[in-house]
Image (tube, rainbow, N blue to C red; front, side):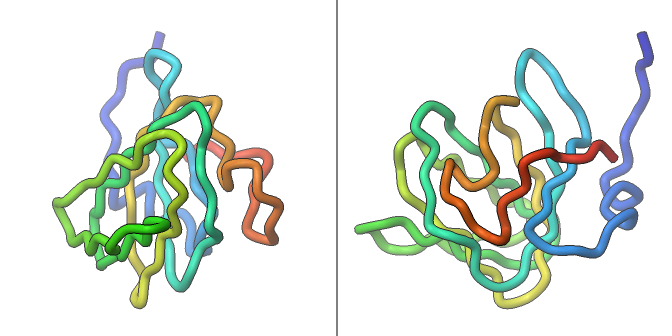
Length: 122
């Protein structure tokens, strides 16, 4: 069993692309993911999983179908409950830590050029 600390800045420096989450850690059937985003993602929902978005750097607006958008800045997080249709949007490059069940499909089952079937570990 390996026990090691993880430096978020070092892990985020390993990739430059947007909307492609990487797995940084796993615990109790959950995954800790790191992702860089810019622009608009696709509208989607997760039928069986809640998602946590923690902003590390930048700023993101979470659009929620039928509700007012929520702006998130560094140090702020939002939990999107299962079944809620949402779309992350970032005007500037934003670094995010995601915490969600390992079973969570990247785009909630919506086919998109942004969909990643297999996520890499960093």
